Image (tube, rainbow, N blue to C red; front, side):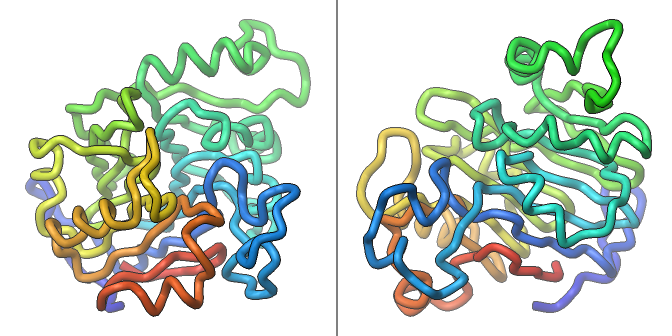
Length: 270
């Protein structure tokens, strides 16, 4: 994939020579292998079939941006040097996307970690992690700062403009994100046509594809491919995959040109 150089955004230019995306986890809420399962995927020796819970790390304009903070966050961050996280963007409040927030503690040496989320997400986190929001915190608690966002309002992290995308996880309204010409959509069941218009001209699309069989709250592989075909990005990557999607090596052969299954540790330049 070729790296972008300059893209105009709202009257100013963003330098995007070094927009790097690393997939920290590409699995569903149970991870792969799934506990107790001995299927071909869970028994595979291919490292691409070992999937932690879903999240990505983005480097852009000298900023480090995370999308979601899974229960596997500690393990996912061990390969990186300890450095400031400039923003953590939350898609929704389900545990497989927020279960690692307590492990933000080491990053507090750089000051509060800004967590961008909707009001509903904040209320949920306050109930689950009250000690992180206490007026008088005890030592060792992660230092976090809430940055409340809305689905219909863009926001900025330094010079980086972020566009929230309203998507639905069954009936639960959640968020995807567009950063320059990179789009990240996970836990998708359906997307309104008005929101798809926000994705026009996308170069790189990351989208969830849980499995091939119908699911109540997640889209199938076929449904993910339909959205990819409609948006026609230069490259598309599948994420949030369960063991029911099949082995990576087999899935790779089934996909159309320009579409690949992501895997843990994959890095791309956008």
